[in-house]
Image (cartoon, rainbow, N blue to C red):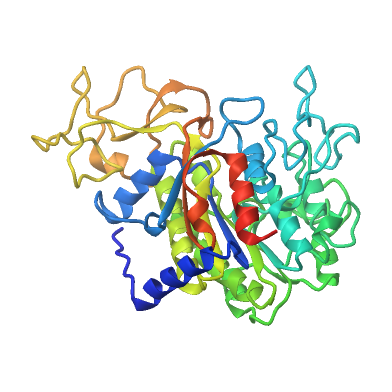
Length: 457
C-alpha cells in the first residue's frame, strides 16, 4: 500500500496565499475532518502501512499541529458524542450527550436512558441545545455539508446539526434534518445542503424492510419534497450535476462498508463523497462549512481488526488529499483531528520495514520475536478486546495479516466489538486561512473557538 505525495507549484502557491490570508483572520470556507478513534498509534500505524516509517500521509503535510485533550464532563474516556459536540459547540458535556448544555443528563440515577425508545425526545427540563458551528454557518447564509461513512444519524455527524440528550435517539436525530417536518431543527434554515453517508433505516417508515423507525414517516420522501435529490449508490453520486443545490445520499441501511470491503458494493469512497460535497457547496458565494468523518476507523478498532482500521484510515487520508487538491487555501481552513483514542499499542523493537500488521520481527536477527513460551506475537495489540488466549497459539505471518484477523488483547471484555476507547491526547493538523492559531496542547472545547474565529462566525 505505497503512495507518495507530490507537491507542485500550485500547492506551494496556495500555501503562500494561505499565509497572506491568515493576516485577515477569516476563512470563507471551513472543512473539518474527523477520524473517529484515530489516536496516535492507529494514525502512526497507518503511516507505516501506507508509506513506510519515513513517509508522510496527506495529513502529515499540514503545517500547523496541536495535541488535544478529549475527556468529557463526567468521564476520563470520552465517547464520540460529547467529544465531537465539544469541537462543534465549545461546551464540555456528559458522555452520550449530543450538542446540549453541560447540565444535560444521558442517564438517570439507576442508569436508565433519558429517552424511552428511539422515537422519544428528551425531557423538556433536561438541558438545552447549544449552537453548533454548522448552525453558525447557516446564520451567515453559508452552504453546509455532512459527509460520513457511518449512519448520518450517528454521534459524530449528529453533533453538527442536532441536539439530544442521548445519542441512541437516532430516529429523532433523523427528524431534525427534515426541513418543515415534525421535530425539525429550525436553526438549520432551509436545511443542511449536502448529507452523504449511511443509515437509511432511520429515514424509512416502520413497514419498510430493515427500518428502525416506529412510525409511518418516510423522511426520504419528505426531504424530496423539500428539494433534495436522493441517491443510493456510487454511480448516482458521480452523475449528480454540480448545479444541484440539495443532496441526500444514503448508501446503506446502516453504516457504510469498511473500505477493505467496498469493492464488493456500490458505495462511493469517502474521497468521492468529499469532492462531490465541495463541488456543490462551493457554489455558494458566502462560502461553506463541511464536516467529513472517517467513522468506521473506530468500529474496526472496537473489533480489534487492525487491517480494516488501517485501511479505513488510508481512505480518510485520501479524502483529505482530495480536498487539498481541490480547494483554495487562501480562503479555506482545513482542520484534521480525532474525537478520541483507542487502546491499540505497538509491541517494541520490531525491525524497520516489517509489515506493521504482521509478527514482530527482531531488529537485529530479523526472526520473529517470541514470548516467554517461545510463541511469536504481532506488533499491533490492544489493551482490551475480545481475543485473549489462555494458551497462546503458534501464530503465522499469513494468519495475522489476513483481513479478518483480530489482534490479541491484554484484557478480555466479551464479544468482538467490545474493545473500548482510550484516553490519550489526539493529534490535530491544520492548514489554510487562520490555521496558524492551531498549535500547542489544548482542550477539545478550544478548537471550537479557534474555528469560529478563523471563519469569522
